[in-house]
Amino acid sequence: MEKYAVPVAPIGENPKPITRSHWKRSLVELTGKCDRHHLHDVAPRLMQSYSEIGAFLHKYKYHNEGTPCKTHFRQYYRFVLDEPPSVITGIRQSVLGVSALEFDAKGIYLASVTKPGCLTVHEFESLYCQSNGSGTREDQGKQLLHIPVFSGANAVRWNPASQDEVVCTSLINNEVLIFDIGYVSSEPTEVLRKRPTVNVHGSSVRQGFSDIALSNDDARVLASDTYGAISIWDRRASNLPQSGLTTNATYGLTSIQLDENQCVIGATKSGFIYIWDLRGGRSSAAFQSHKEAQSNILPKEIESININPSCSYQLGFHLDDGWSGVLDLHNFQVSHIHCPPPPWLDESNDVIPMSPPRKASWLPKHSIYAVGSTSNNGLHLLDFYPHTSSPCHVDYDESKNPGETLECKQNVFVPLSGLVTACATHPLNGTIVAGTVEASLLMISQKHLCKKGDDDDMMATLSIHDS
Image (cartoon, rainbow, N blue to C red; front, side):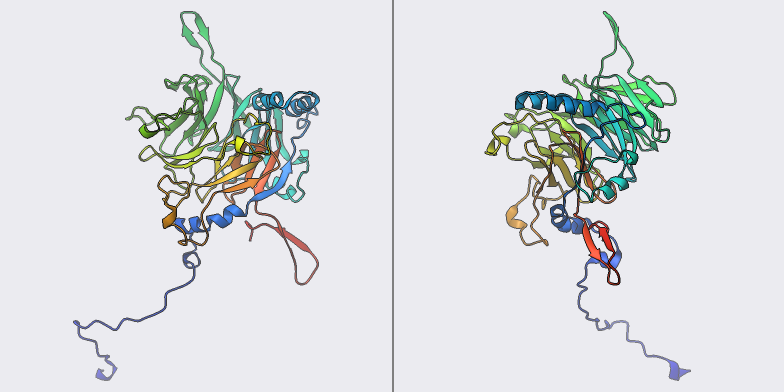
C-alpha cells in the first residue's frame, strides 16, 4: 500500500501560489447580475439612447359610446378662439392637457387622466407596436377604456393589490372613483366620499383631492386634499373616511407617497414635506427644502414627489420653478439638485409661456429621474445616483471624477414634439410615456432597428431593449 501513498508537504510550509491573469470580462458575464455601480457606469449611454419614437393624439370620441370626448372638444374650442398667446397659455394650464399617468405593476396597462375629465387605459404593447409610425392617431380598438370622469381630474393610480382596479380623483370634486377595467363600463364600481366637516355655521364638504395612494392590503385608500389634510378610507368598512392626517399647511398638499414601511409622505404648495408613520410610535415630521445658509431663498411649491424604486430612501421632488432634487430620507437632507436654465435665456422665445404643473417619474433601475422641461418641448433625464459621483450631487467634485468610468456622466435633454405635463416609466424595460398640454401621449425609448435575415428578405423590427 505504501507505493500508492502520496507525500504531504510539512504543515509549516506554504504551498507555492498559483499565478493567473485577472478576469478581464465584466462581472455581469460571470454572475448574471448587474452591480449598482456598473449600472451607473453605463447610464450615460442609456440616457443618450432615448428619443421620441411615437406620438399619439387623443381620440375624439368615447369608447363604445360615440359621444364627443370632452378633452377633444376643449382642444377644438381653444383653436377656434382667436386669442393672444398669454390667454391660450392660461387656458392650457387650467383646463387642458394630461394631468397624470401610471403603469400597472407589470407594465401591461397604462392609465391616464386629462384636465377636462377623461380616463383612458391603454395596452402598452399595442401602443409600442403602433410607435413604428410616429404621429398616428390612437387606435380606438386598442383602448381598453376611454370614458368621461369629473373635470379637473388630477391623479390616477393602480390598486397594487388588484391590478384590475384603477382609481382617480379631481381637484374640484370630493369623490374618489374606483373603476374595474374588466367590466369596461363608464360607471365606477365604487365611490369613496369625503366626510363633511361640522362647525358653528353648519356642515360642509371641502372639495378637491390633489393626489391618492393605495396600500398593498387592498383595503386602505389615502387621498390628500387642497386644504392640507389626508383622508384614509377602509374599503371594508364604509365609503367614508375612518381616519385622517392633518398639517398646518395653509395652501394644501400637492402630492403624497406611501412607502414600504407604511410611512406617508406629503408635499405642500408652501414647500414643506410632511412624514407620518401609520404604524404608530412616531409623530409626524416636517421638512422644508432650504437650509439656514439658504434662508434668503423663498420656498417654492412642490409639484410632485416620487420614491426611487431602486433606492427606497431617495425621495425625488420637482418644484414649480423647474428645479428638481432628491431628499435623503435617512438624514432629511437634500442630496441632489438640478437647476435648469431659466426660460428668459432662450432668445428664440419672444413670449415666456406660463408653465403647467409637471409630474416626474423614476426609471426602474438606474436612479435616473425623468421630468418635463418648464420652457421647451422636451424631457430632462437627470442622474440622481446615490453617490458623490453623480453630477447632480451636492458634494460632486468634477476634478475627482473624469476618466473613472466609461463615459462622462452628465444629464441629458431629450427634444420632443410637445410640452410635457406628466410622465410614467415602464417598470420593466424603462420606456417612458409622456403626456402633453395637447393631451397627446409621446413614447420615448430607444429607436427601432431593422435587421434583414440572412436567408430571406423578411424584416424584423426591434429596439435596444430587446437586443
